[in-house]
Image 1: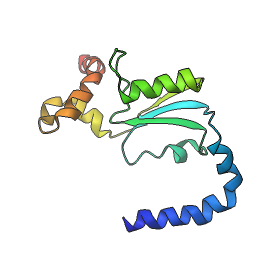
Image 2: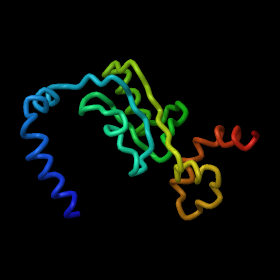
Image 3: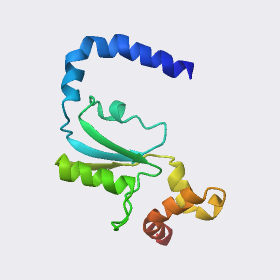
Image 4: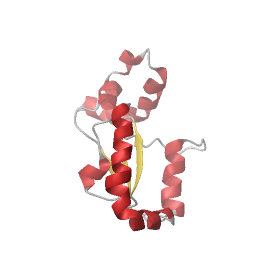
Length: 136
């Protein structure tokens, strides 16, 4: 935890302080170039991968970068996508997967997830893709 606190202090001193005007402008609103859907895996660092600044991407993260099918039930992904497209008018959508994804490994073996029932259910949204891979 100490590393996180030190990082916040470094950000305040070394990043925020010299770019206060930039961050003040961001506080007034956003106009991202793309909706970027990626995995919640801690190894995925969207700004590093895309070399973007705050405000350039609207980012949604979840286990396996899954977009569930449309339904009348409200969920975080559905609400975020609706906001990105309906309110922010974001013109592009990027779905970014990665190698050695634990979620996709779990999707390929959902029987092994009995102690993680919510993960197992979430990964069920990828069953169609799993069926295609298994048929190959």
